[in-house]
Length: 202
Image 1 (spheres, helix red, strand yellow):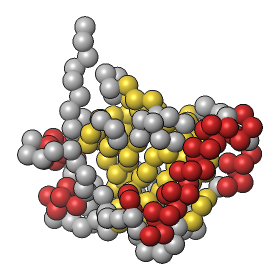
Image 2 (cartoon, helix red, strand yellow; image 1 turned 135 degrees about the horizontal axis):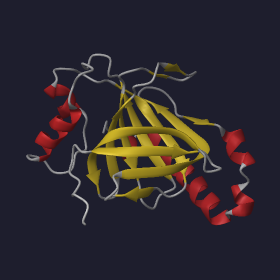
Image 3 (tube, helix red, strand yellow; image 1 turned 180 degrees about the vertical axis):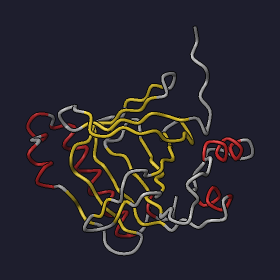
Image 4 (tube, helix red, strand yellow; image 1 turned 135 degrees about the vertical axis):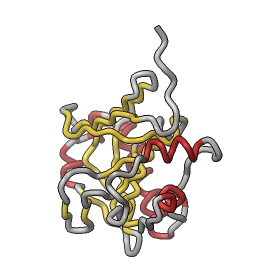
């Protein structure tokens, strides 16, 4: 029996794994596009998570971008404090997808509920290649500790460098380590100069 097709606005189950493969987080998000990259809209439904550089607040929106071949993903974090909690994002996305190509912006979605969602910044996770099961509507990614936080205003910063070095990827998987180092240089340059993915808000 064939699985039912998946469409923009359908829920996808996302699971984040630690470097050792243990599950550390699982949640659902709404599919925007399942090409390359895979785009998912998620809402932070956990209690507020204050960090030294930003706060992931309950109700915040994340536009999550997953690349099939690149060693990282990018989460654009938006302030969702003015968006009603009962918004049916699946219905909004499905309706919008009938009149638009692949979603590349959150702002039209926010305008549909008469709310503005200021961009807080971009969170880059360096990872192993993503595993995406279209028929099972499940996406799994394995974190590799190293992160970049690029605020909407201000300089980017590299996070968890020490934890990343403890993985010793340069010894065990030198090819992956080289790819990550090149991506880190490129992304930091783009974040500092507001070019590439950081040139405009998603």
